[in-house]
Image 1: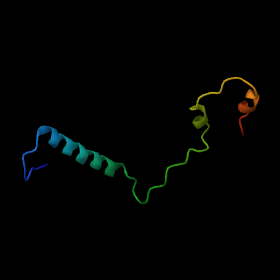
Image 2: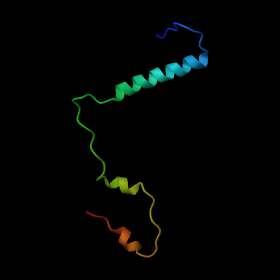
Image 3: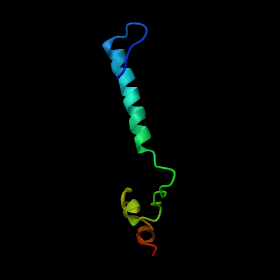
Image 4: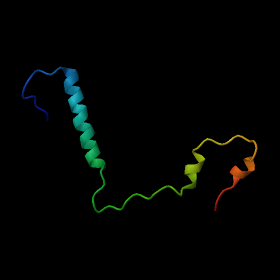
Length: 69
């Protein structure tokens, strides 16, 4: 429960304050616990390459088709 101690805030000001409090609470819940394992890095994920724009065909286009394995 939130209680206004001083002043006379507008409904918009109360809504903004409540949004900040709720965002902070959600961020605190999303933080990993100290004993939790770190997330896996995705730098080697092949799907990461597929998200980029594909190159147009042109000179040396064959060199961009090599998939390191």
